[in-house]
Structures are given as structure tokens and as C-alpha cells.
Length: 512
Image (cartoon, rainbow, N blue to C red):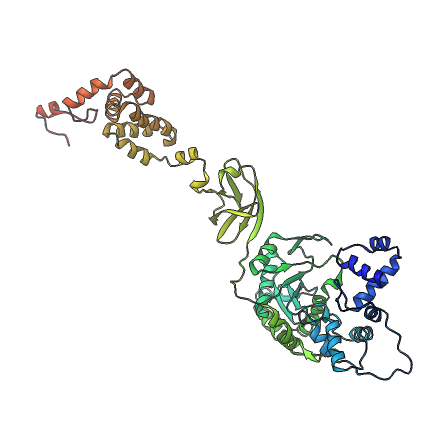
């Protein structure tokens, strides 16, 4: 018995392989397999109960064969036992202990387990004990499609049928969708949650492209949008292994039931809209879920309400809103492009790869799994959406320059400075070409004082010297002082548009 205990410990506690256990204990690998098979059939795991003696362990694993003259013993209620196994925490060993407490002369555990397996193999409930109540929801698209007829042209197109089934109760949901697209796939799963009115712990899809980007037995890659969907509802997605139909036997059976009892009876009806088709499917689903199954002698709906529903989480969050994901690289201008429009990201992310989550309303930017910014979605296929805080300081200051702002800054120095800046801007085909020169002129007030800059701009205007270098030379050589005296003697502005008092002293009548 000591080696059996060691086999159980190494297998369950240390996760050793059968070959490693055989080498460690000096026994054959077939013996290790036999011990583990008997221990599993007896419902044992590590650590073993402290009260379990070697004699008890031997009786559990190697019970004596029943003699031909063995008296009849009370037969357990297998349908009830199968239902109880759907409850969390209930094991076959616990049910046997309760059975023995009620019938002292009942079967030993090994015989009890063998009889249960024999009964299970003959009933439709052979998979029920493998799925805990409310734990798994199996989902897939059916192989058969349904036709929709265009009432105007008579054109017929095929639509897809989505199926789901709860693991414990096998309750079925079915609905038609236009195609097997990612958006329809996520919408179908959300509709299934609303149909059941609660959330499972685990979602088990097949390896369809809309849900799983790379099928793999050990590390399947789930579509980013599907993973986002799972995070929204707080569930786990565990895809079925490729080419392992037993992993998704529940939904395979649901698909078969749907094709047999829902789609086949509707095959001769003509449907013009998908809503009309779904109304007919919903009625058939209700009938199918209400049909009493032979094994448990109960309907899928009854089993769902008894086992699954109490164990599932409430559906108390908003419905998931579809969003697509795209991988992109940040351009040198710290923008990323989506459908022709460019959106800014923080400038320190230039040349890095980021992920975009795009919904009809927003575009979110993620870097290393963390959201760094959000923009309102633009429907324009050209142009830019730029957040000023994403720009480097120098770019931000330049972006804030406009002709109006430059003229306003110049007016703070004086009217001549304002007029000088206006004429500099007007002298360029594109005002932006004069931005730096204007800023240079305005900044001279810090070096020479606003009063001197105002006089220098007045002198430059009088001589039509419209340039930054001209104003700076006037200030450097002190020529603004002469202009300052002139301005003090004649405060009125002097330029070509002012006629002066002499013109009016001639007494001529104005032509206008």
C-alpha cells in the first residue's frame, strides 16, 4: 500500500509523469497506470484522508469479486445521483458515503462506482457529471444555413445559425445572423447571455476564425476583440482543442438538435427578413427546451432552472459594444492612421507599435495593454485630429500661432508694431511664412523695451522696410530715438493714406 500512496502523491502533488513515477518507485509503467486508474475510479486525490488506513485503501482499490450467490443489495437511484453530481463540491465518493449511511448492507465503493459508470454509458446523461452547474457555455455556428428571400427581386441568400448549450442542463439557444463575422459572433454570444439571463464562468467556442485567431492544442490565440468581450463580462474563454470533438460534445449535440427539431421543420417555409426567421426559431427553441429528456426524466429548461441558474452570476452590466482592434506604428509626426484619418498620440511613443480599439463613437489607443488616450471617432477619411498635450512643447507653441494672435500680441506693444506685423503677414502668399519673423519682431521688446520697439516699427513703416532685420538694425544703431522725437511732435500717424492739413488748406472741393 505504501507504493500506491507514493504513486498518488507523486501524480497529484508533484505532477510527475508516469515514466518518472515508475523510475522513482522501481515498478512498471503499466502498474503505475493501473494504480492511478483504480484511484481515479475510487474518487481519490491527494492528500488522502488521514482516517484512511491501508486496509481501507486496499478494499477501495481492490474489492473482492462478488460471488455467484451474493444476495441482492439496494440499488442506488442513479438519475438522482447524476443530478447531484452537477452541484459544486459533490463527488461520487460523497454520494456513496450517503448511500452507505442509508443502506448499511449496500454496495462497497468500487462496486458502486462501477455500477454508476455502467448506468451512465447507457443514458443520455453520460456527460452531465463532467460539467458543474453554471460553469460552461458551449458556443458554435451550425453547419446548416437557412435561406432568406428578397421580396422584390426573389434573390435567395443564406444566413448562419448560432447555437449554444449549457454544460450541465444542456439548455439550447439558437438564432440566425447574416454572416460569421466578428461583429455577428460577439453579438450572438451577448444574445445568448441575455437569453439565459445570467453569465457562465467559462465560454467554450470552437476554433472558428471570428473567435480564435490561431488554433493550438496548448496555447490558442483568442481574437483581441473576443478577449475584450470576455473581460467586459468577466468570463474566461477556453477554446476547444482542434480536432477534439469530445471537448465540445454539448454544442455538437445542440447543433444536431437544432438542425433536427428547429431547422428541418422550417425548411419549407419562406422567410423574407431575418427578424421573421428568428421569431420562428425562437418558438421552436422554446418547444425544444421544454421537451422531457429520457435520461433525467426532465426538460432542459427544468434542469437549467434547478442547477445552472442558481449557480450563475447575474447579468448586471451594460451590453458589450462592438469595437474592432488594429495594430499600428506611430509615425514621426506622432499620429496613427485609421481609415485615412490621422489621430495623435503622446509624442514619446513615436516609432513604437500600439493597438487601436475602434468603436463607432471612439478611437482608443493602447500601449503595452494600457490605454494612453481616447479620441472621438472622425468620419472624415482625411485630415488630422490632434490633442495639443500630445505635441512637443516647441510644436505646441508653434501650433498656437495664428495671424490673429500675432496681431493681438503686437498691439500690446503699440499701434505701429501692430501695423508692421499686419503688413508683414499681408506681404506673404501664405501668412505662416511670416510667423517666425513676426515673433522675432515682437520678442525685440524684451531686449530694447516696448517704447523703443514701437518707435523702430514706425520708422520702418515710413521707409517701407518690412523685415525683422530692418527693425533690429534701427534699434541697434539707435535710429529709433529720432523717430521717437518725431512721434512726440506729431502724434498722428504718417503714411501715404494721410493727406495732411496742407491738402485741405487749398480750399478745393473734394471730388467725391
